[in-house]
Length: 315
Ligand SMILES: [Zn+2]
Image (cartoon, rainbow, N blue to C red):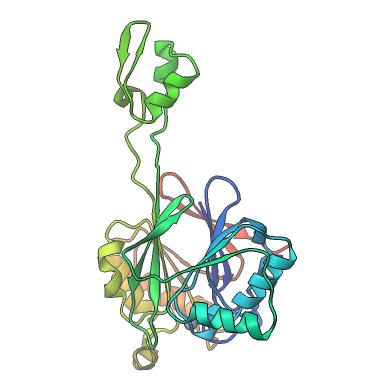
């Protein structure tokens, strides 16, 4: 599965960072999920390989403008592009009312249904390859992290052993892969002997604005990747607390304590001309695989939960 950053600035866009937007792309097919949709997100999408037709759902972490003012434009363009498939929007209370008012006043007709849900329950919904739940955070308004856990993780077949046993291609292999023992030529073939040990489902947490990383402790214990804001550095800890944000040391120390293997920091204050100060401070407090995201950066979390930077897409 892949992550692509569409906007990595906090509050306001800069000449190299747009406001928040993150795409999570499934490992099979083109389906993807948009987490936050700051103003200009649809322009950023034009410079990506992502298509609005393949957008499965939009998740808004909170309703501050730098995380949602791009949504009406994305919805309108998807309609003009001919989308007919319903679109899920998972967002805090108020989003449905806001979009309904915007549609009425601007006479926005959409040729597809919007299906709103609020991130109140622990298990939100089944979204394609993922089960998604929400964690309430600490910010000036209601803000959530979304926890994406891979579903239907299949064991992989050990083809060397299968070929050595002479088990043919076909339904028997499907049964072995789903954990079922089979009989072949009168011999019991145990699934456990012909598949690699069951894989742990991959778990990705994409957080909204949050001044208290400890709120994510339970979910971070077994996560493979945490994407979290780092608006400031520690010299602005007082300011961070006053406005409900994290800083590089606070989130990096948290990730270190929980042994989070992969950490990507985003939502960088416009006061930082580049990511050097954030990167330096975070790496002083975190020994895992660390990145500070830039717009259009793409990352791949492979089947073994190894995260790699795979380049910046900017056509
Ligand atoms: Zn923000």
